[in-house]
Image (cartoon, rainbow over all chains, first blue to last red; front, side):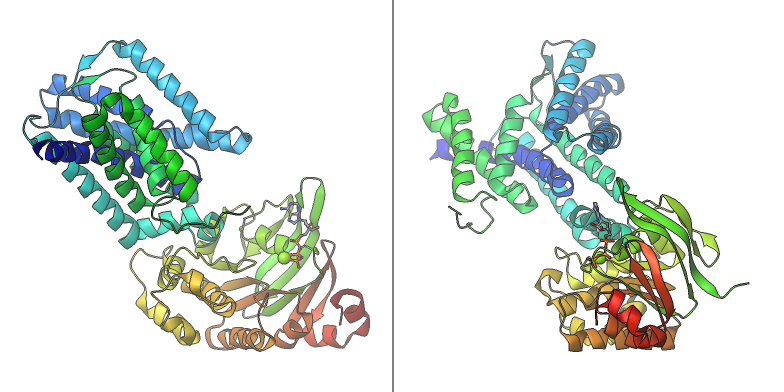
Length: 283
Length: 238
Ligand SMILES: Nc1ncnc2c1ncn2[C@@H]1O[C@H](COP(=O)(O)OP(=O)(O)OP(=O)(O)O)[C@@H](O)[C@H]1O
Ligand SMILES: [Mg+2]
């Protein structure tokens, strides 16, 4: 029983990270119909920013804020100066472009900071059950999700962003600067990915540190429905719990396979995610 | 100097090699109600899209109250008082009815404009009890009301409408035309109405422009166009 509680708590904490990543993917997918493989690159830039700033200032939290700020700015720049110009001149698949960005970022980080592992500290103590670090992960992701919900649902900016995402042309006729809304959406998405990076990074970071985490994040987004922010959060928690139980009871080597199986299962039964209505298969 | 609120001067536009508008010129006076008619593919939608900057003009000019707005980006055009209800309405079905309406007024202020909202809902009573619903649940007629309502929330000086009668019952179409006339009388709104339904549109408007293959074929007072058999047979199909 203790073992079960342990696994559940650690599953929820890592699930919060997958939920944040999935949420960041959904924000971009809703606005641009693009699965953004550059998201771990943003998280990478964020954690290395923190790893540089925190020792200089002697404060974890200054590093934390710097990471989120630099991450959000990187997201905005990527949208404005890479994704948008390329979408305008060629049909080149957006996935290829963002994958390319990921490889460039990983290479760049390796060149600047080296490919070896660096120690990276937790926001709070990581011992205990649940540990303060686990609680921080869950609470920070919950707060961000709630703020995001309020932004989209209750503010004029959120209304503009939704209009721009759903019907760009109608939005423009109502005076919405659609390009600016896209950039803002990418910045917000990148901010959330940076938070996920700060939570998933410890205890060590290296240029490939987020590869597996990101695979689980995509799994969560697909399970929850790429179009559904609530689904992303539920999907993240489910994947976190699932991975935790499988590693705990059956062995960690089965975890990745389980994620894959989950994706296949969901895609074959409910292609639009668990929160969607089951769609009738057309033969 | 002139009382012409909207002036279109030698406006041309194309899709690749296909010329869709060829040196189109016409004017609409302040408080005017003008029909733009023509067969399928005549260039009516392209004309409106070029006026509001959704499509790039190859040549020519669009003047609104004397100001050249030809190259103004679409999202700025509304700030000059030119509103466009696009073909099919452009209602955002993922938003609620109320959010669609609020969106229309956002360019003026981020604060909710309840006064204008009340005025618009007065015009379209069926929308009142549907405010909280998703716009996707509305009927075709209600959607068209919402589309026009959203445009009016912007408090425009000129309203462009692209086939508001599309898919609507004749009675509903007539109500919408009557409503546009009333609006003009009460608020001084200037209206440009693109229509396939030529007879109905000419009965409601003061004057009409007939497009044929991207050019102005005939123009004149609506009553003249209605009574001119040659125009009716050649371009209007009734
Ligand atoms: N996106 C496009 N790409 C290429 N050609 C287009 C495009 N849109 C319109 N056209 C062409 O431009 C011409 C004018 O089209 P437009 O849509 O303006 O006509 P319309 O008068 O609005 O017709 P309808 O009454 O059917 O709505 C047509 O020949 C049409 O085929
Ligand atoms: Mg048309």
